[in-house]
Image (cartoon, rainbow, N blue to C red; front, side, top):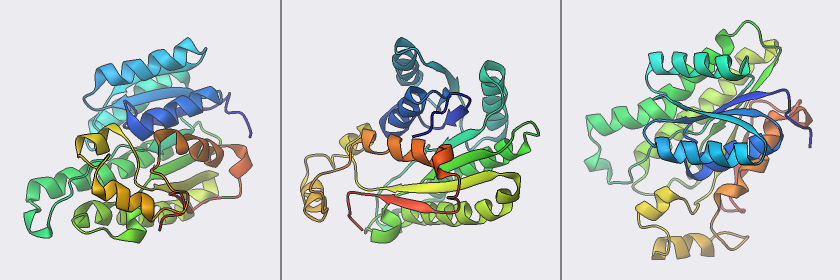
Length: 249
């Protein structure tokens, strides 16, 4: 796979889980990486320390991707550290699985803000740079957009919208050499799913039973796919969302 030595990447929500694994993989491939976090400073610094210990380049930057001024600062600080940003991974996401009747206005705003408005803001910020010669964006969705799980109506709706945004943004930004793709991870073992009580539950067992490759996903399953999509090897791929779910759909 092509190396990413000349690339500067921002990975949002990268203090743990899938985002942290993606940040480490991009750094291993040679990219300079801004490890974005909203509240978990310690986790982000651990990811940075891991990257630097292996000879990579990384910095932790706090920003709430749903806040325009934060996104502006995220790009300014990344550019100050490493130069123009030409790789963006929109991984930050929030979810609450609950009955439709339990959705509140605050929860709606929380999920739509982080899961959709955040990627819109960061994509705008990347595209606003006038000193990049092409770029690649990867939006992290969910296999739930195909599976439509009960109690996930709001989360799946925001991610379905993100996939539509991915396709349209690819058409708009393609003439500038900016590719926009997505990945749709399947159910995975992360800090978040541990906290939800999903890991080790009957729900996980049922999920594994319906997965052709016979296990839950792990954070490390996704970084190599993202690294490929942002590399020159994927130069003819844009406007696509790759299902990365062990065959579950």
